[in-house]
Image (cartoon, rainbow, N blue to C red):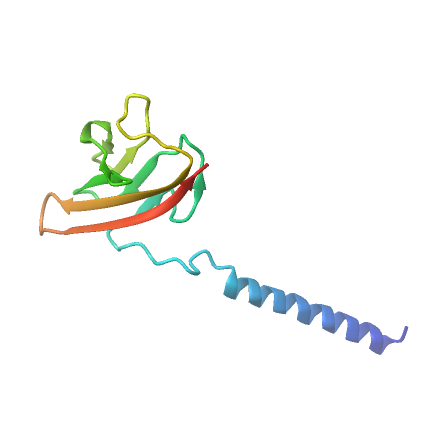
Length: 133
């Protein structure tokens, strides 16, 4: 083969790699098709639309000074079952045998209602769906 043919092949391969990188960047972003979280929510788990095993806990990370009510499939999780770490603002709940609410395979909806307990008032709510397998 001639030098021009090698040059053409390497140029075509280089352009193909660039095209794949551009398509991956444009369509492979983790935020594509998902609405952003409200600014007061620092992090939630499980993520909206995810599939998780039965023993997965719900975790809500809020700024210090906020309290959260957690609702699962329309039922309020009792405060006695929610583990709250005041120093970090993390609220978590995992289904237990003694719990009123248990996971079953299928879709579930979690709703949050928060309020600020010190300083200027701030209240809000957010809900999302995920699937247990």
